[in-house]
Image (tube, rainbow, N blue to C red):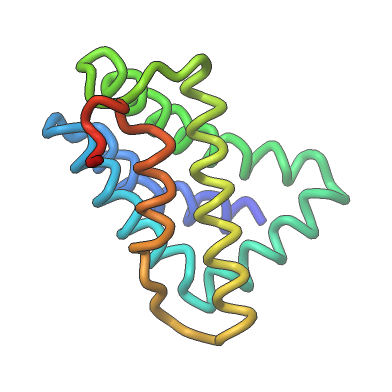
Length: 144
C-alpha cells in the first residue's frame, strides 16, 4: 500500500500545481473541478478509492499515508479559496478548509455515484460546477 500512496501523491501533484496557478481564482477553480472530476471518475480510480477506503478503515497506518496526500490537495484548494475571498471574487467563507473539504466530498461522491450507476468513463461537470460556483461566488458577482 505504501507504493500506492506514493503513486497517488504523484498523480495528485498536477492538481495541486493547478490550484496554485495565479490566474483568476474562479477560472482556476472551474478548471480544477473539471479536470479532477475526470480523474476521479475513471473506473480504475473509483475502484482504487473504494479499496483504499476499505483498508484505511481497518488499518490506521494506511489511513495516515493516504490522508497526507489528501491533506496536501485540501490545503491547496483551501489556499485558492482564501485567495479568492481576499481578492473579492469569492464570498466570505468562515472556514476555507471546511469549504474545500465539502467541495472535494461533492466531487468524490459524484464521481463514485455516476460511475457505479452509469458506468460512464466521463462525467459532465456542468451541474456540479454550477453548484460549487453558487456556493463560493461573491453574491455581487452572480447573475440576476
